[in-house]
Length: 120
Image (cartoon, rainbow, N blue to C red; front, top):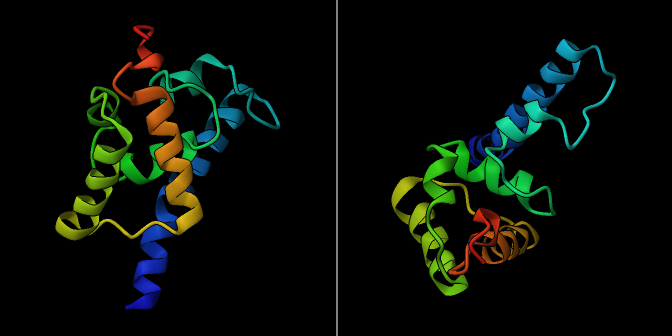
């Protein structure tokens, strides 16, 4: 059971790493440019900041990341969403440091003022 949980926790990061690696290979680059159009398309325009990879990986591994990006919730509501995802939808519980990164990112860019959408 613990091995299965560990594998589920690592999967989102592994998928993103593979996608980024394939993009770099297709471009003939040894590493990806964080400002590349392909990367922005992959991340659906999510601001390139600490926590983006974790939000994209953990949230986007079960459903479209667009579902997350359209919300505009307060931090306490995002916290409740994470609780519900673990409780009701078998999301792997986030380690405390990862949880803080995810919540910080969501609060900063996808909070009520929706800075990432240019409306804040």
